[in-house]
Image 1 (cartoon, rainbow, N blue to C red):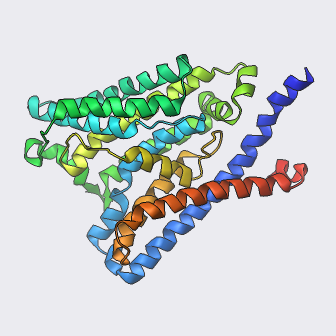
Image 2 (cartoon, rainbow, N blue to C red):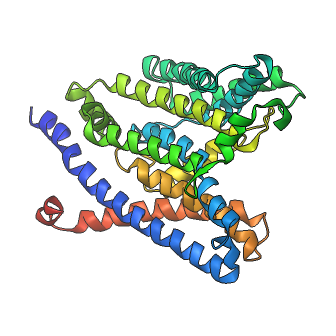
Amino acid sequence: MAAVTSQVSAPRRLPSELSGVARSREAVIVVAFLAVVAATTARNPAFVFSSDGWRDLLISPSILILIAAGQAMVVITRNIDLSVGSILGLTAYLAGRLLTDIPGIPIVAVFVIGTLAGVGLGLINAILIARFRLPALVVTLGTLYVFRGIDVLWAGATRIFPKDLPQEFLDLGTGQLMTIPYLTIIALVVVTGVWWYLKNTRAGRESYAVGSDPLAAVLHGLPSSRRIMVALVASGALAGFAGVLYLARFASADSQVGVGWELQSVAAVVVGGVAIFGGSGSVWGAAVGAVLLLTINRALPVVGVPDFWQRAVVGVLILAAIAADRYLLLRRARRPQTVRDNE
């Protein structure tokens, strides 16, 4: 009985410590973002102080923020979803086909169908991972290629062009409200909803517990499989929704849309303070991580850094984020238990 008690009580301290690490990282990422913007603006004031510069600063990370929000839900449960880029690409092309093949189809219907398609693809991942107990890394790596193969087989060499899309749909991707792009507003609303779910609902708190210590979660009687399934389905839904927005934003879609986005989403989540081993972090941190990564990608050419260094910079950020996790956690672990309990 004593052994069981120790196993169950341990996660109560762990999430608190990891949450402190995540909050520290989020603050660092915000400071880093402001520093990048300030340094780049000093080099080229148009980076921010122009209508296009301000708009690009806000709109560029919007779609990645949606993908990262779903990825954060999955990573918090100590899993990963590598299929999000393929889901985004498949649903973007699906939305394009709906708008071109069914003239007059309501735009709301396109979003609903695209999101439901993402739900269905996410459910495939969820069943294989949560029900059949297969490793998330292997399953989603496989579905990454399966979903991409379906996209390539369907789209072939064809492409959706701006002239094929209704103007009111394109306005959604380029319009703005009081200088704030619609896509940015949508991303903020979605992130707020995911944050509220994770913080204020029992299911959300159980997701953290499942990721913090899966064994203790089972001993507590938590519905671990259900929480993992919800996270994976939500990730698929957000990727599907983001696919439709991608089409509205770029007014084009082919079989290669979304290639590499799964790695960008993982990078945003890890850099933003969501522990890759699960159980800590916030969706706001993932959103800030997405903003930082894409801002750096825009800033490097402005300051004269060649494009091929962009991937290297992202890799360095990921390694630094993991090192920061380890350092902060070890530093907190060295403090007296009474001090940590009062933080």
